Length: 437
Ligand SMILES: [Zn+2]
Image (cartoon, rainbow, N blue to C red; front, side, top):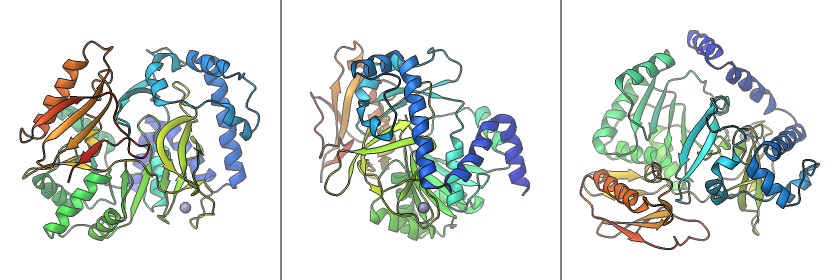
């Protein structure tokens, strides 16, 4: 009880909007489906008009498409709005902005993206997006102030910053495992820390959580059982799900989102389908096949600074047209396909998770158009790149990335760079890592 009050009091001072938004979200997921859809559509029209008026890029794009401010009157009108591609975002970064690039609340990020082409994007730092995470937790029988164990790729912070972080979260305790390089020693220590902290939640990249479970099982470690395991960033194979749930004796929940549009959907207690966060995301599925499965087109209803409207993410799923047993009326989608959860193997040392490898070009988004890692039978790696030859520093930066890869494999593997004109896609979907076997 004490933890709850301290958590809320801190948040009321730090970011009151998050607390209010969480309350709204709790109410709206039980609303009638028509009301949810209607509100989502109204928000869509609002951000469409805003982008049209204040973003030079959207003004041009929509005017050329023959649209005007009043073009969207019903849901059926939405298909008139042209799709936004990743390439357009890359090419028109500053023209998409509706605020000045030096705006105080503007956050900047870089995504590896599931297609292997890094992209810069902007966010609104003041948005209370953590409320979506809190709602997920409430679906799974947890609370935001529960202790947690996290497996993420981490940027190195100083001791002082770490200390401030611990203070900021107190009395909530969090432990972290750096997923950028995983080996048995790290797993051993992390398993010990989990047993010490007894966290209600374990959260991380699917590949890394899975590797941890394989370690625990192989070494017969007696591990604490959390209330929930929350994984992101990749589709889960049935096999992975079985192993993880068996090892932790806890339910695994899958979440879907991307760096540029996070918090899209998550599984509820039923663990079957994902509920779309319709209060913040407008999700469409286009080009559906015989199965009802098609391309995910997503609109961020909240990010007014850097609007992403009818944005093509490159993933596939289908709508599920049944009412969920959990009582929540948010739209349902099937598990998302088209993301990679693979690893690069460094013999006798460990594995490098795909979620980390997707970020190797993050510091140099201009250097390349796409990349792919191929691990050969003898474990050597070919880094295939489609260089951005109009950028003078591309060659230098590709070589830095190559050297970083060699360091990452602790000098055990040979890494060669291969230039190519395009990365061939696998059934319409680029793959990041290909392991020859
Ligand atoms: Zn549900």
